[in-house]
Image 1 (spheres, helix red, strand yellow):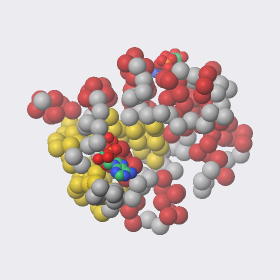
Image 2: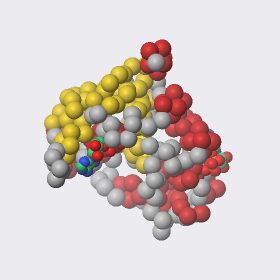
Image 3: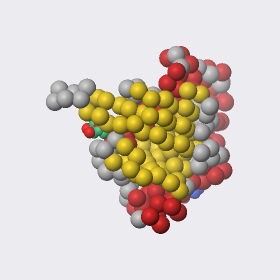
Image 4: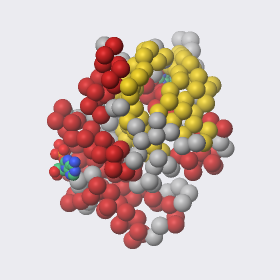
Length: 236
Ligand code: ADP
Ligand code: ADP
């Protein structure tokens, strides 16, 4: 579902260029939950931001759902990106909008979104809030929600455009252990019931053990080890 080949990212910087990714190969099977784990500075955020081309790789190719994103025009890329949901560490919700309105955002903007009527968008957002267990908080603003609830809204929003792939950028790093467990359970449920492939990055091995089928360990912009969770734990 996600195929990354020889991905390199070099950031120009005053003190000399920084090589954040150094020839990364990664293959995420359809329907799986794949984790990339590593210390701060290992290159995880750069990698996940290169998957939907929020960041332009210096070289290498990225395929998602059978399309080579690195070869698309900006217009084609905008359309493909709608099928890639993203969940963020700090939720990135609009504070002036309610939970429901936040979930409606991906349906309002971008190509295709205009095809839904207001009523349809509203219905879809309420369905998604129900999926994440927040049907009764649809009219709450982010400030009135707990961290875990905010992340549930973030997940519902990421699912709004019916994505093939969900990218999770340290989605539980700002949450306490118990909330982390419940948000991870939700991600797993989304994966199993909706068939969405999940690629997550984390600095916590516990997160990988809890939900991933396969994982890669990143060090200094390279994949140091990868395999199924069973393999990796035996090698540990
Ligand atoms: P991680 O997510 O594993 O903490 P990052 O991808 O954020 O790693 O960073 C990898 C390396 O790239 C680090 O050395 C970081 O300082 C550098 N880096 C990340 N973003 C930028 C940027 N916009 N400009 C320059 N260097 C960056
Ligand atoms: P927080 O710790 O942020 O309050 P919770 O994990 O307690 O988040 O969940 C928030 C709401 O979602 C609660 O009302 C809870 O009952 C509900 N909830 C939790 N897990 C699920 C689930 N798997 N399916 C549906 N609803 C859930």
